[in-house]
Image: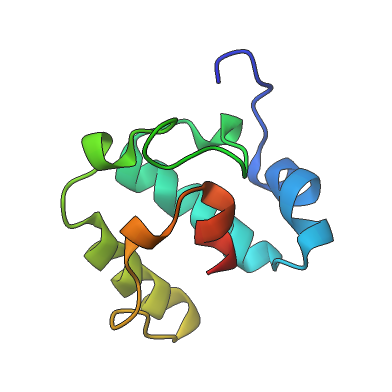
Length: 99
């Protein structure tokens, strides 16, 4: 990942998500919140990156990050994901965003 260019939130959205009909608001949420939860430089993360094998999310996050994610998501979008959000169901960043 170190060899990849660092993209700001606008560039990350334009390069990876606009053409996939993902809203800027959702793209920004994932970019900012996942960086906060993981401490990873999300400026270099790409949709095909695997959450466990490439980003080591289970190793770098607190075990309850998914609860914080669903709470923050509710605060931002007024949508409750708590009954259906299971990070083990997502293999890649793209799968997480599409969920």
